[in-house]
Image 1: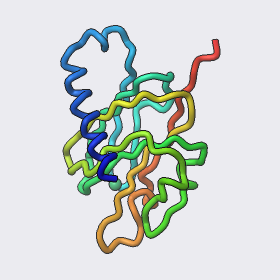
Image 2: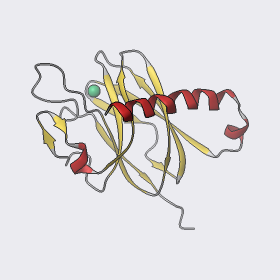
Image 3: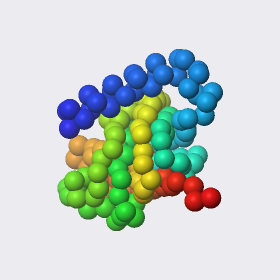
Length: 150
Ligand SMILES: [Cu+2]
């Protein structure tokens, strides 16, 4: 997971830089969504996207450290395989991106290029000594990327 984490952080900084210049945004090529993390829920202000870049503006509004994992899967968000309180990511789908360890009251941004398909956002944290992980307590939500048919 270390390599993946480094990759995610690079994406975060890349997006901050990207947003500093506004020309790409003005062309409307990227879609943005606000993601809120709390105990024990993830909410998005949008659940349907077009293929392309999607920017996940993520805020941890809870009291615990949370993370955000983006996985492509045809499974329902509450049908994931869990072992020892954590989602077994390799058995569920392909992880496309991840922001690890977002402290309470802080935010992070993740930009991903997503193709058409079904996706789930979830938090895979497990607190020390806890039996149920954050996913099991409800931190999961599905969304869809769809090409327009018209
Ligand atoms: Cu969490």
